[in-house]
View 1 (cartoon, rainbow, N blue to C red):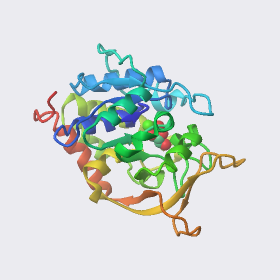
View 2: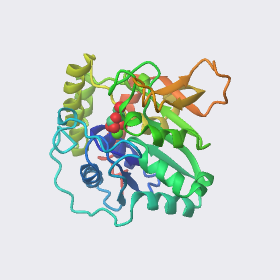
View 3: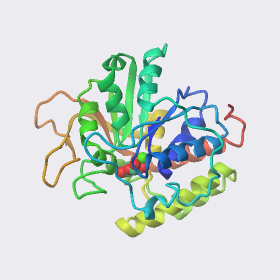
Length: 312
Ligand code: RIB
Ligand code: CA
């Protein structure tokens, strides 16, 4: 998993760890994004400790982006720590010494089975690994990422946050030839929390569920105020939900490129939904899904922390 925790990234990590029989997590790599690299890395370590899986190695990656410098979301959405809504203890485990980009290359090349990358932040580390050692393309099963938008935006009127922070990285990933699946704002803006959904999460009654409840309640308040939505969109867990239950979602193979130089559109995913350019599709873009099924899956994941299914 390559991420910038951020509350929603942290929930995605908890979902991945909840299914040890499904996912052999080779490692978690962090990037600057929602908050600084130092904080995203600390938050990944905190989340693994919350999950009781301090055996999962965490590697720090790029502290800035290929062209854009680092960008840090204002603290209203993610709080001072980047995991606003929770007060998780400072981690006892340490980040690995190896740089995330080098880890990605080594782990992918060494894996006896093709590796799937779950990417929930700016794609800087992934692009750097593809540039540094393109051989990894041959052993990547798929990159499944949260980002982009057909008709939505959230950081500029044209762009979504993860893409906007590093459009050049997206261009590298989108043209890599690797199998790609995108979960854009068009689906995540449908995955909205509500009082009922949050209470059902809290009712699971373990510490992981309590943390997820508090984080979602925190971001919900910000998002409802900032965007006038009927709830808080749950972004990054959609990547794990797709990996666990792809049947929850509907999408289409389409051609997608990334606008780098538009005066008002830099960072926009240009998604040719109707094949107007007659170009070979490069990304499976998800546009719709079973919202109740998504939240039920999050609850199923959290319940697993009480049943002993999540063992180190
Ligand atoms: O636009 C939403 C994305 O930006 C999510 O990944 C969130 O964590 C932030 O990184
Ligand atoms: Ca993220």
